[in-house]
Structure formats: C-alpha cells, structure tokens
Length: 180
Image (cartoon, rainbow, N blue to C red; front, side):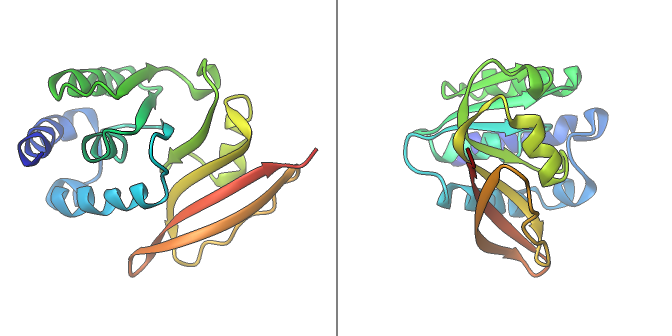
C-alpha cells in the first residue's frame, strides 16, 4: 500500500501547480493531508458507493479508494483538465473501484446515498445541486470550520456527527432525510 500511496503523491505533486489541483498547504505537507482524509472512512459503512463532487486532485476520493478497496467511488469533476488528471491517476494506480465522471454533477447519471464535497458550494446550494442524484435519505461528508452550524433547509430533516480534524476544522457527517 505504501508504494501506491507514494506513486499517487508523486503523480499529484507533479501536476499540482500546472493544473491547480490543490493549494500550497497540501503541496507542502501532502502526507499530513492524505492521512487527515482517511478520517472520512470512519463514517462510511463497508461496501458504500460514494460520489465525490468536485474531485479536483483526487482528495479525498483516491486516498479512500486506496485505503478502502471495499468502497466504490465516482470522482465527479467538471473541469476537463482535472478530470483528465483523475482518469490518468486512476489508470496508473490501477484503481478498479473508481470511475471518473467528467462533467457537471447535475448531469451525473446515477443515484447515490453517500456524497463528499469540499469547497464546491455552501451546503444549501450543494443540496439543491444534488437533489436529482441522491436517495430520499442520504449522507454528506464535508470538512467545515469548527464553528460551522447546520443550515435550515426546507424539505429536509438533518442530523449531524462531527469529528475534529485540526484545531480550526471538523469533519462533518450530515444525514439528510427528505420530508414528504
């Protein structure tokens, strides 16, 4: 596993600047960020099918796929160059549990009940964006500031779990249930 993680790190850092895959802090301390992303797996039941919206450089999707081969992941990326990077990474890393969807999530052709999204949109906008691709009860995992509060979203009952990641941020797991 260590070799494949290092292979992903090398590939990601090689293209990080030219494709704007992630910010300078991830580039400086890739291993730390990789390890933080594994926290997502604590919320995911075995065999989960997961949609990662705005996958960019493959974080958290690729680390989850590498560390949790029981998961099936869709990496959704609207920007063609980043989607091409993801396709290359998935191929080179021989990730059989990952598929890349190159396009807007509004055109995603499947229905899922687990979603991750970082820096895509505020949660109410994200919920609206995902309405056609999620089940009546679904889960969102996202990194947010420690002071972040659950928004009120009409048509949904929302519950929350948190895991501290760093002093100023938490990993948020929301369970969203549509209200009939």
